[in-house]
Length: 128
Image: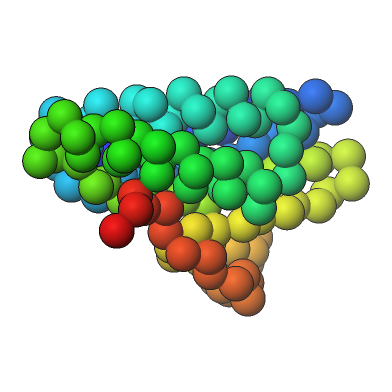
């Protein structure tokens, strides 16, 4: 069991959110944390937040999870990386933010691959 996941989440106006995230570690703790964060990404997506704001809320949540779990066990202090974007097929535009995750690769119809200059925010991690 690990903590990696990706999602395509329907949004209003024919838009979709694209999420690629990774919780540090393996095993039950990482899988449980992944489930919490995946649910949070879906809930924050329903609020129609811009990508950078969604990642900020996700970072706050990771900090709260770690604070709560650090007092309960030594398995606290997880970290997570996330790439979150919103694609609008009507305007053919895409807005993406990342927190510690690798930049996305864009593959053109001719097979050419480019990596957009996307500033990296810090990975979400608990206090400490």
